[in-house]
Structure formats: C-alpha cells, structure tokens
Image (cartoon, rainbow, N blue to C red; front, side, top):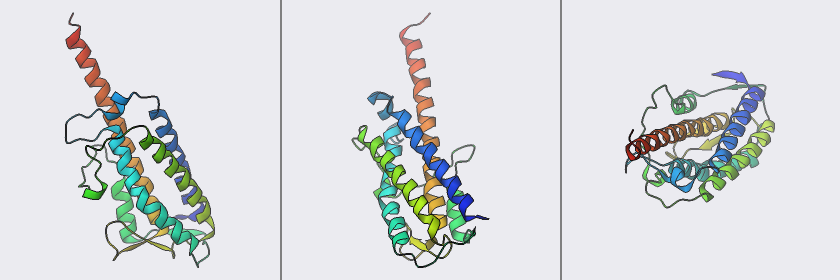
Length: 196
C-alpha cells in the first residue's frame, strides 16, 4: 500500500475519533448490557474493550518512545512494508468476523470490569490522537516500533498505527455484534415471559 503520509494520518485520526465517539455511547448502556455474554467463552462488551486496552498498554508507550527518539524527518509518501501491511490488513473485520486466537496476557475473559474500562479506552484514544498528530514531523517509513508478538520483528511506525487502529475497528465491530445479540436475546426472553 502506498499513500500520502498526511492522508494516512488524517484517515487514522478520523477513524480514532469515530472509535472514541463510539466508546462514549457505551456509557449510556446498563451494567447488565455491558457485561452480557452470549456464552461463557465469548466476550462481553467490556471484555472486548479491555482486550483493546491491554494492547494499548503495550503499543501506546512503544509508539510514543519511537516518536520521541525519532531521527528521520517526515516524507511526503508512506509505503507499507510487506509484513506490516499483512498485519494491518488482517485485522480489518470481514463480512463474517474471522476468529483469531488471543494471547493469554491479552485475554480478558471473566475479568471483573466496570465503566472504568470505557474511560480507559477513551483516554487511550485521546493519547492515540496526540501521537498521530506528533507523528507528522517524523518518517512513517524509517522509524520502527517493536510488536507485542515478538522482539525479533519491528514494523514501520506507519504500519503500527494502521495495525493498532484496525485492531480497534475489528473489536468495535465485535462490540456492535454483541450489542445486537443482547438486544435479540432480550426480545426473545420478553416474548417467553409475556406469551400472546
């Protein structure tokens, strides 16, 4: 993938704002809605968000450190790396959300969560917006970050931004699906409770 560096940053800023706004809407949901799960092995809305928070705990400091220590100036174009592009593209949700194995340290299953999880995610998105803004002065191609998977691989910071933000999109889609299933389940239960 090749694009203008500024266009990429603007696109990622817009997506991050949308993710932040979406998280704000979750504050209107009840504790029951936020913690509802389709089955014991699936994630609730808050568990989906906590999964993103756990990734943010790794990537936001990593991105910030890379920006603060950057030596290369920004270029007009960003060209995605082969591996970076693969990771970033693989995170985008498909028509039917493809399941991926989650690392144990990033799996929030059966955590005791409350609305602080939403606030933490919102704060991380605000931090991401600041980092995207700061990244305008550095090379999105030459500056690289570590990844949570292994210390042996580094990605161009432009691809790291894409990966993290696409990963957020993926799980926000999952949250929307959980909310829809909860609504359908609630309707079904009320029909059983009040038969015609």
